Image (cartoon, rainbow, N blue to C red; front, side):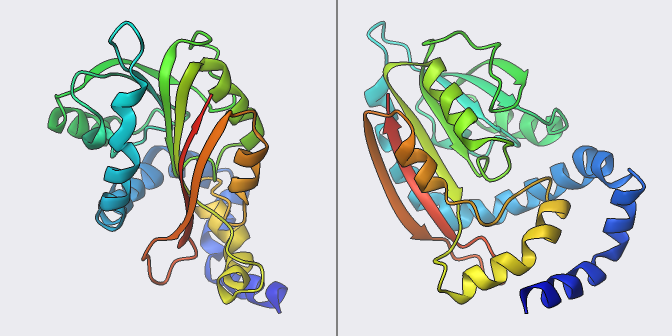
Length: 242
């Protein structure tokens, strides 16, 4: 049944599959479609998750370094939708594997001048070699672990760049319960969704990667975000301490 519905969905998305086969879709998606789509989706997503994010980032100042500075590193900054939640005066290093978010990112920076922007690095989450070990107080990652090549490799880099006592903040959509209809539809949508939305995987059980990572403390909740007619309603949210 799943294979049949996957085939039906693939038939509907056949033009995109054809463009992908011709090598056209990936550069178009990276440069045009995904930056445009992500900015529009982010506006909707922020309305749905604003309270959760306010609560999530409420204790960020607790991880200020002994020097009095709070240095943040954001993986997969995108359009900068998290900037509004960061405490005044903190220093932010932005990273993203896709350098084509400049317009949306500039708008977010202009709206959020209460924080200091230090660097923008084009880097994958699994390879943050441009960031010195133990150099940041907190790492933020929202809606990114679904599309990295290697979740465990990304978490390993998070632990490397964090100072001892630093924190990793996350909000990620995840696989639904395997006995649910939501998971059934996630399995159907998986191949086409991954192609259309720049490698986004619907069925990752990211909480297991977090539980197995070498954090000394993990605060994690399973929540549902009200995004009707999408397969990305189940989420995990929380933070982990090095």
